[in-house]
Image (tube, rainbow, N blue to C red; front, side, top):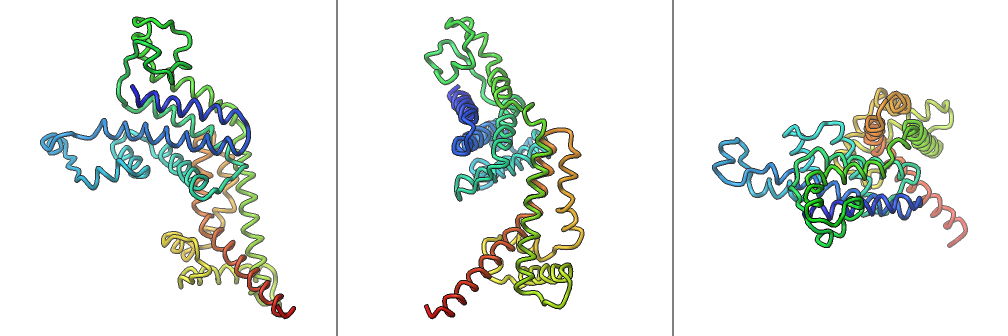
Length: 325
């Protein structure tokens, strides 16, 4: 009962912060929605854990303490476990991973993307409510509202009667989910595809502009703009292959490999992302397509930005030397 109350309060407060309509409150809403989603995932995982050595042998799920510990601690491991158990579909898992990455960016590094933040929070609220509805969690029995003050918004129409509350508690999890889905107002995301498509176009243009800037600095002057762009892309790929510590600063080993293996088809896929996003019929699928675009783009985007900073820093030092500083 306490767990459901905690999740319900997190989701209710996240919806309230979302209604404030400012980036500062949306950032808090994202944090709360993420915490609620992980709590539900955790409950679903421990519900399925076999509790004895014999049951583990019978079910063929002989977890080590380390494996169970990773599932209990890590968001990604919870998703992977529930996907393997066929309790979570791949698209939902894909979007949850991206939303969790958004939350980590805002929470740990104060990276905020105002353009997509409102949509991300609404989708996270909707998915957290859906998880609450779909995944098995601990049953709840309420006989007095004083026991669970955090659930009052979801029992507002029920008299404070032990019998009525007990009857209502049988469907309370679903009532919380339904209320939060309505508060998320996913219908307001009818233009989500266009919003995400516009954002992906802008992100791609910024990367191309960054490449042109680098090409003007590193590339030869006696070739066409397109040729310079091609050569700077080759240079970026080569620096990723060699693991240049300045150019690849901020990239994981996987992201370095991703840039090092870039091909023309990869660049074409990034360029065509807006078309794929707009072609989706469901907000969930549109966000999944956008997540794929970001996974493709971010290593190259980070590397181009880092190299641009290095060029600007070198130019600043040159200017200071010329002025005798």
